[in-house]
Image 1 (cartoon, helix red, strand yellow):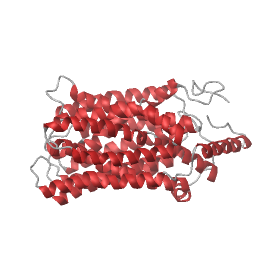
Image 2 (image 1 turned 30 degrees about the vertical axis):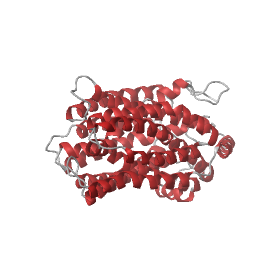
Image 3 (image 1 turned 90 degrees about the vertical axis):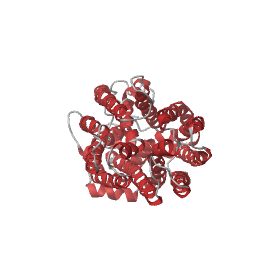
Image 4 (image 1 turned 60 degrees about the vertical axis):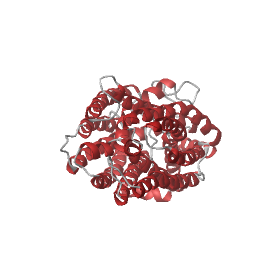
Length: 461
């Protein structure tokens, strides 16, 4: 088998550490874009612009409808792309270019910015994300078809994402700012950091990492790709679980900044709490990688969602005021450990689902399937966040103002109760995911045998 760079060591199926590090680098600035949109931008626009909470909820929903249109298209087109630079790389480069411009516009709104500004800036950033992230994730699934190595790729990407969170939030801790509260000046500085790192790290990965092997397959229509989702049993199981877990995260993430800032009254400590959470993600990754090797990717994911649901109850014990900081730090660390597997396992599982589809239908739909995953993830945050803000409006909760007992109880029911129910449902569903390491190994070997019979190069292990 021919080998590019050091994607494989001779006689070894494992990807080299160097390959894993370089390939995962773009995840750092990608995370620096994702984090504020879910956790900071809604509360920031509510506080520093003319956009109301209700309008923010509607914009979350409308902008994701735009995503619903373009995500499958980008995945399908990247599967069918043929160029001297490969299938995935041209899309990754184009997405990074779009995102660099959009991130600055979204992060630096004038005080007079209204709903139209937020909607246009959000849609531009979502377009950049889609064009960049879907082909990048499909590329990750084609670097290897080995169960263990796929987990390693996802773990490295997840670690880079958590480091991205630390770098992003660390900007506000620089001594040039009077405090760590995220205001217009700090958000602008964060945007500049992303604008430097994103094109630089994407360019390095594009230059140094080969695309892997795209298994030769018959072509099919876009409608057939969509229809295959309904005929792929493992994908149906995973999708149901991912929707429940993602909606829970969408609610929690969208309201978390308001919880720390408006409810607890320690908004100036939000950055420190968030960095602690991201640090716990990084530290916990080796533990979850060990758990994955022992119980499998899907059961590790179930345990992660279960722990997140149970830990959510702890926020009910935290009382507003300056004394809330230490309990919130403890919660952030524990929650960061619990959620770490959700940053890695889903993408490895979809890679296995893609292999199942290749064996089932003879068609490689990696781009389309990762597009579906990305779309669902975005919809989860949009719907979860949008519904959360709409519900906050219905119970009469006001950010930055005094709230009565009824409004506060409603706020806590939305922030705590709703995610717990959804996390428990997600854990119960994914526990029964049908592809474990043994079954995936059988699928991989049959794909290689089919490739050999067709007299085409076998996929990279």
